[in-house]
Length: 126
Image (cartoon, rainbow, N blue to C red; front, side, top):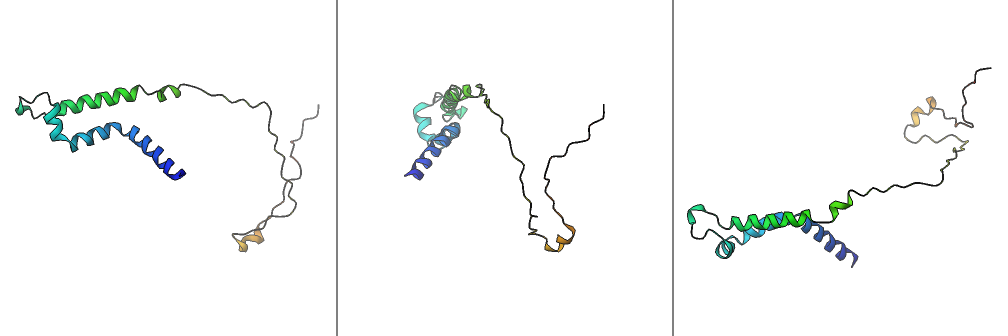
């Protein structure tokens, strides 16, 4: 059931995204009937309009409805997140050397000594 719902919502998003392309595909599939029913230039066959005027109206309507969507206003909203406390990360205290897994032949030249304290540079004497 969840998979069907996810596919349905994805199809709705794709239909909204490709609305202009769907108008063009619908025009190509039904070109004869659109020419017969909606063409303004039926009496001028030398123009070879074939319902392109109707297609232009439909594309204009689709782009206007796309520009009126409220999603464009959400990009202007800025969300700030302020954390009221500071995270403190403790230094790892590992005393045993890490095992060398990827290059056992190089273990002779490898040494690991974890830092037990934080290094502080020497301070000048006053």
